[in-house]
Length: 352
Image (cartoon, rainbow, N blue to C red; front, side, top):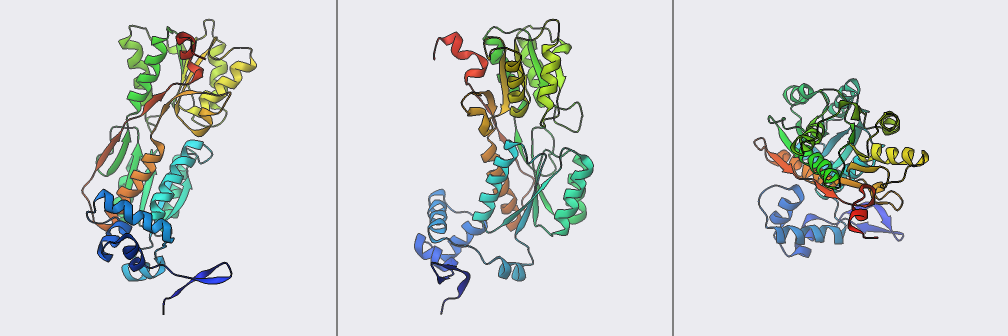
């Protein structure tokens, strides 16, 4: 007699769906279904999609307790981010959680608030919970990543904008390219005084966006005015403080590039309160393409990070390496510039 799950559906005990049911529904061998569920071994993309569809249609949930006892794993992974209040990290976490759940893993989310001391606390908590692996977004203390792997044996996948992190699995976003294309776009629109609300002035944070900003100016033959660079923190209130400084200059910028969307939106709001029109008086470009960026009234031109892909690929790589140890892998993802109304492109083109 089939075992029953411990929850009811419509007042009756629902029968637990097994891997055998999934395999039958997808018309594949049980071993094939197992490879898809555990993300171990080769399966063609067409077959994988068929099995994943069967999982969704049947509502299959792996018996994690039995698996843990048998394999001495917790089937949980940790996720370390900087600021869960930022929409960017919320989208990243959602992608990680969905990809992990499809493979029978749960996710424990921790938040550093951009503090090195809190980052260490996050690692301690995750290690105490005996997670099988960690997805770590933009580590503040790079040495801590190597220490975790060496001292605890926990597998780590790093998501970063830096070019380093070659000793472990890394998903890297070409931040410098994204910033370069954003600033170059403003230059093509005729701007020469382009302010930059930048990343924190701390070597622990990636500086690739700063490099992209400077490279775009240099290649266009524009001298970089250091007064037009104001460091932010990526967090709430940072963009507000920075734009006050920039607009208070004797010769304020005609355009502002911001290292993230949160600071860009704050800059737009402050400028409007001061009577400036966006983009007629001040063009604004952000970085991340978070969900608020496309809202009516914001319409922020921004560099779109492949946020969902980053989270999903991070989870897939981590879980694959847990099933079968892999040599260090690096995946490079390319951002794209999404043009909306805040940069003034539509004014130049004469479009509505």
